[in-house]
Amino acid sequence: MKNTRQCPKCGGREILRIPDHPMRHASGNNIYTSSLTLAKKIPVIRYVCAGCGYTENWVEAPSQLNELRRAFG
Ligand SMILES: [Zn+2]
Image (cartoon, rainbow, N blue to C red; front, side, top):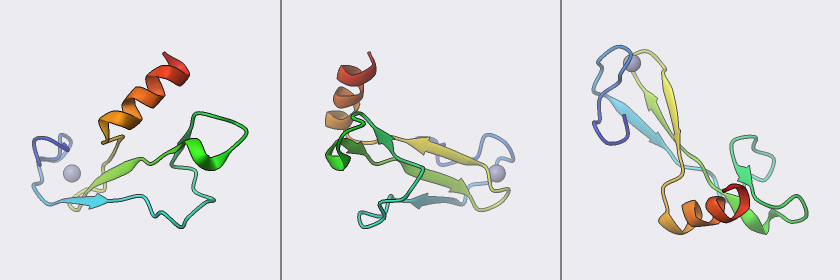
């Protein structure tokens, strides 16, 4: 959906990009690679279909994907 700009569920083409809010610490939508510090928070960008509400979550930055590989790979 992020790449095709089309909803895989309903075929809608109005896709909203919802970035993580940098000041929002209590979000459950981030991935933490360390239990000790918030410094390793990986922001997750959401893509929401404006037609049916289907949502995808994406980690967009290659450096952050590398961080996830180190932590969980
Ligand atoms: Zn949809």
